Image 1 (cartoon, protein in one colour):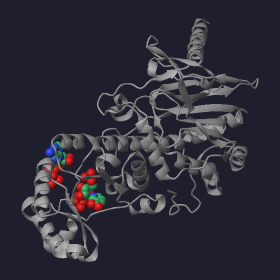
Image 2 (spheres, protein in one colour; image 1 turned 90 degrees about the horizontal axis):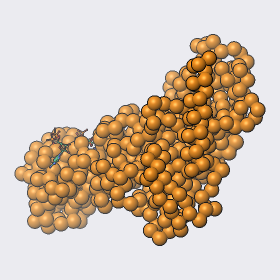
Image 3 (cartoon, rainbow, N blue to C red; image 1 turned 90 degrees about the vertical axis):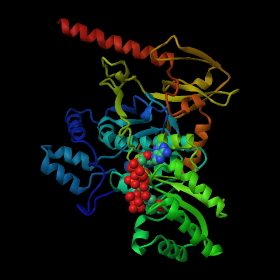
Image 4 (cartoon, helix red, strand yellow; image 1 turned 180 degrees about the vertical axis):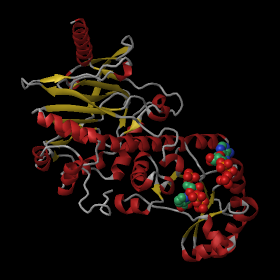
Length: 491
Ligand SMILES: Nc1ncnc2c1ncn2[C@@H]1O[C@H](COP(=O)(O)OP(=O)(O)OP(=O)(O)O)[C@@H](O)[C@H]1O
Ligand SMILES: O=P(O)(O)OC[C@H]1O[C@H](OP(=O)(O)OP(=O)(O)O)[C@H](O)[C@@H]1O
Ligand SMILES: O=C(O)c1cccnc1
């Protein structure tokens, strides 16, 4: 959200870390700002102990990239607060964004250590956009993944998103709602999200309605006289003795004048209470009335409630979804993988670390999703150099990049490239799909994943393998860098 209240000329171009602009300055002054570079973003471990993540955030990245330009007030601010020379300020003023961006599509199932977004173009420009891209995809992907976990726990019941009041401010509520819908929720209580994205909105009422009228009967009756669809919140005083009998009384009095959809419970032992409430509704002649539940629910409480045979039909979920309560960060990073040298040739780059998982994989890549034609399920992902194309191969050798003895040969397969062109030379070439289509895609993608990767507790590790060529180039580059460091330390 732009902050026009603070600055009518606000733009998102300064939504970056200062060190990015400081590096741009160095690149500019040293004459390498326009060298071609390739950066890739990826995360290192699956969030929430899950077996996959649901990629999301691309729409926001596209809007961000399309909006990029330094306004006069941005430039004046930089000039006043930093030490940059005027020629750099002029360079920023005239910056022509020429990035090539490839990305996973929203709703794609993605895995640790494979590129999600790839940014190629002038080094300084690639550097500038790192922070915002990570800011966006880290949040959206984390939340869409949390939503998918909740969807898998719930099965086919309805899920309503109730998180806005507990979210980390307005943007998180709005976009978190969109991510919820992508990941598998059915509706939201956030009206603005309904208007902006076309997500179905839905809602019951709060305890304040009952307190305002002074009694459950007055409140339910008043609500029923002003609304056709009615879900009564029954736990204000005593769910079993007062709330549900009153809801039933009003539903009977109003008859066909209302569509009595059910009751919501928001406290207490929801397994026990929901069973009692189900019995009360059935005995009163309302077998189709649904039981809604809310109160700090997440995939764990839902799984437990289902195991206890709770009679809950609709799940309202707020805090623990919208705040990604059990894992607040995805931890995606953005690494330089190739850069143009002074000779005009691209060379691969690598960041070495004593921690194996932190050694980046060099070179511009493509991610291929390999599915066996006979099984219609995914065999794994094959991360290859951009110049490779598994569709030209009859059989594919797939091996674990760390434990190379875990390997297999796949024949009769389909390979689907996952990184799609989004921007070419700064021009958007990708049509953003509707959020409903993204949601449909997510569900279809989940159907293509074996159950072993989908269980919420201790799922199997999905294969994200490197091509032989990529693996060899990584090992060779590590060796070259090590040798260089050894030689230098002996000088
Ligand atoms: N049968 C159950 N099995 C597992 N978890 C449950 C069950 N019933 C409720 N819960 C969960 O246990 C937690 C109960 O929290 P808490 O003690 O705050 O609720 P409460 O008793 O309803 O109190 P309050 O009235 O303050 O909301 C909630 O997260 C709720 O979703
Ligand atoms: O529990 P969550 O998953 O976060 O879901 C959202 C919560 O927001 C409401 O409570 P709140 O106390 O804010 O309002 P109320 O007065 O209507 O109960 C609602 O009753 C849910 O309990
Ligand atoms: O409509 C509801 O029941 C609702 C909306 C937001 C938060 N809690 C509940």
